[in-house]
Image 1 (cartoon, rainbow, N blue to C red):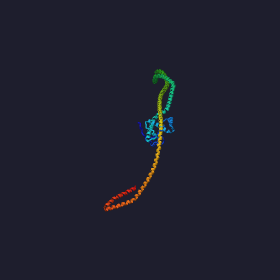
Image 2 (image 1 turned 120 degrees about the horizontal axis):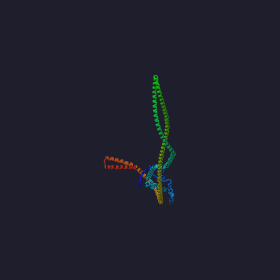
Image 3 (image 1 turned 45 degrees about the horizontal axis):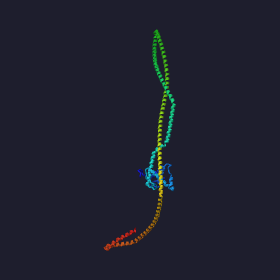
Length: 486
């Protein structure tokens, strides 16, 4: 091939299979035999289907109609429709094959195709189709992504709207809960101050309770001491009673002393009972204070629980704010992705527009070339008309010569048959002559043998001559038999 672009030549079976697979076969039951022995309509059919399916746009087909310039030039345009369609297809095919670096296509490949040329052209075309299929497979993910762009855009817009609505709801809830949070903060501060006051009162009450417990211990000690003295006095009283029998005066004095001591003890007992009553009063006061402290402690615990709830609410508000910030960041990233995809789509549209412009320019150039070629073909066709007349005259002469040769051939065959019949008759006459001569020759041979036997018994020069003559007769008989066989 003339260019430096090389591609593998495919076998006819592979070419037929690939043409059927790409749906560019001129007929459904295409086989390797059709490519091995191509017809003139094979290449135009394949290339025409290729341009219809892969190159031309749906509205770009010329439809085989002639232009006004062609109608003005041609006398009978309806007689040249097929030739002009073929020339248009040839020019389009030549331009396309040159674009893929195959520059050996000629018009003879359409009118008088050969198997080698058909295999080369179809191999170039199939290699281009395989290359195109690979490239489209590589671009398929991008195309699928760009096809889902609108759906993805709608999903992202719906997600953004939902997130914006949630943000507005959170902000509204935050604004509505802000007075409650402020009131809770005020209540918490007041409760903290009350807790401090209650803590101080609790410390004072604990100090009073410690003092009362100390006094109670002292009173308990005094009561135990009084009980011990009372038992002691009772023992002494029993001793005095035993002595009273012996000395009543002394007993009377001792009694008086005992009475005075008892009076003192009663007074001390009254004082102890008063102290005990005071102690029980202080205990009751302490119990009441303890109950009040317990109630205040429960209230403080409730306040602490309210504080914990407020803190959890603050934490939830902070987490929701953090979530809102994260969602705003994700929304911004989605918007950046949307902008990026829009840029990619715009870039793909620009590339598509450039490709369309390039294709339109190529089509316009090819149309111009086609017009020039059609005019050239019309001029060539006009020049070929006298040649066609000469060729017709030569064909008439050739047909006349063929008829003359046919008549001469028939006369020659008749003469040949006559000569063959004469030859057969001569051969038959020769065979009959040889049949009549054979007995005579056999008798001559027998005579020669007898003479040879006689000469062997009596040597004689004439016998030598006879012996020399017998071989000749034998050779003549052999030759006659061979000729008879032939």
